[in-house]
Amino acid sequence: MRAFRPSEVVALTSDAARYLPAGAVESDPKFYSHWWVDSVLEPLTAQGVILVEGPSDETILRAVARLKAIDLDRKGISVVALGGANEFVNAYKLFGPAGFGLHVSSLVDEAEAGIPAGVLEVDVADLPDHGVFVAKADLEAEYGDVLGRERT
Image (cartoon, rainbow, N blue to C red):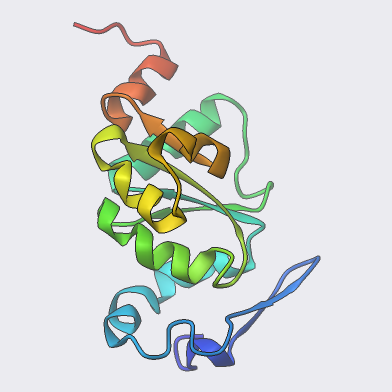
């Protein structure tokens, strides 16, 4: 898919054909270099995507899903490590309602919650209503709590 401009790609799923609206990302060369890459394009055929800040969050999220007997692939859910909370802007541009129209959920540290709130144009307190889980300390601490580790 990388060989084509984003506006030329149609992502087919079992229930929909998804494509970017004209001009959604075409004018942003930085977008191409960071987001129009193979590792990020796989979710285009998913039912939904979970955005996490970094690779440790992705690893732990997948481990917790396995422990809870949740098969993300069978459910058609892709997980994308953004490489930092500032990339929520581009991720929503690509995957969200103004992009390919996937169901987008996110995990974010409380210190970074203003970023997805700004992108979604909602108050931080309303993020859960928009599929954004905000970790009170940081995501790693939340995962530890889910897995039952004791705090020291």
